[in-house]
Image (cartoon, rainbow, N blue to C red; front, top):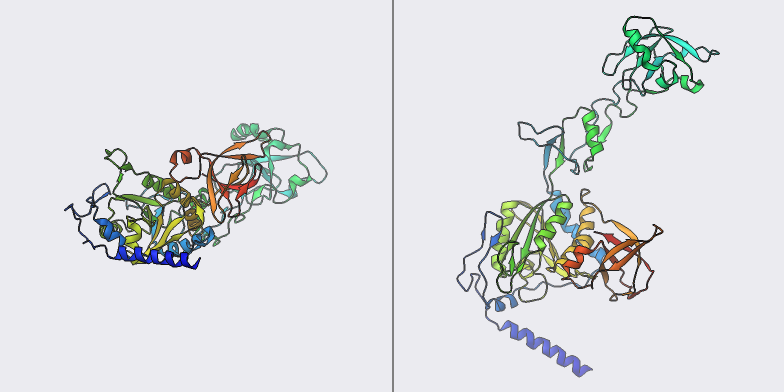
Length: 498
């Protein structure tokens, strides 16, 4: 055994020495192709690298790779790099009404408030009627005589000033109308014999009386069916806190208080980068060995669902120097708080994201999940402020799973606009196996059983990370725990809805 171990160590040292003897390469392309440029479409175009790049990539600085960590541990370190970047956002003022001539735009739901707001008036602003009915004094109701009758003194529509209520009479009031001075109860119109049919006669100047036929003792208690001023919101009450998510109800509350504009945090600006000189945009012709980029479209759609403003670009080079130059140009142009890359973070020779950014403080390691094990994370400082960098694997399924299992929970913990995971209990519809020590996420379709209480999960395809068609058909990701080496039919597990 000791002999085998010595030979293994010697073999590793020999390989390292052979790599170190490979020649270096300058930062300019060997084939004379043009330097990187940002096109008007936002695509970064860079000349093709030659086979001689192999030596340069092999000698690039390799960061220390920590031991494989749990899903929860990686979520925590993502939060650590996301927090300073998200806190760097500035605020903007938006209108509750139509856009103004001063360039202010209308606020929408899902924005985050940036300042506290206190009610500038009470809600309701005055005592008003909760019902269509008749306002009267409880003291004018006979103690023994039921039903009873009171003369009608007039009508109080909504939006008019509150009149005085003559003693011994009643006034018709509409819902929301101010309570007449002196009235302390409203009896609904349904509890009268005439209803509002007598209002035309009253308007014509004829004396009419209202017969209250179905009222009970509780109907004539003081305050019945009267909305008191300030019973909903008191003057000066805190109605919006910093970091509250603006819902339709919160916007309606602000409007009901007469507030015309609100200060909110700017949306997270996210720059999505697909990497690799083999990538082409959909619609472009494909050359030999090339493929269409799916990751930029995937990440953009998910990040827009997070509530972000997203810009996408392709850095089509495997040269670290060119990648860094193109990335710096994009950061200056778009000033992102978050950068999400896809691909280029494994241990291969052309892992441009790892090779370019390891020397800039970005970390690379492995998470105990499948798919989506390789991950990168860090903060890039620039003149425009800190930008959190999240480097995802290049296989589309690994990328998609990482967004749901790692990025979404990390963001939701810092930014309430980002929706949380949607988890449900499901029943395994087949026998499953999973590697020990790894949390595996399997693509599944969900079937609700006839009892309506049981949801069965059936896998779609295998666990391979390139099966994008299977992901597109899936309803959820079935979570198999680290000790789930064997999962029998009927076992209860959690699934993350897609």
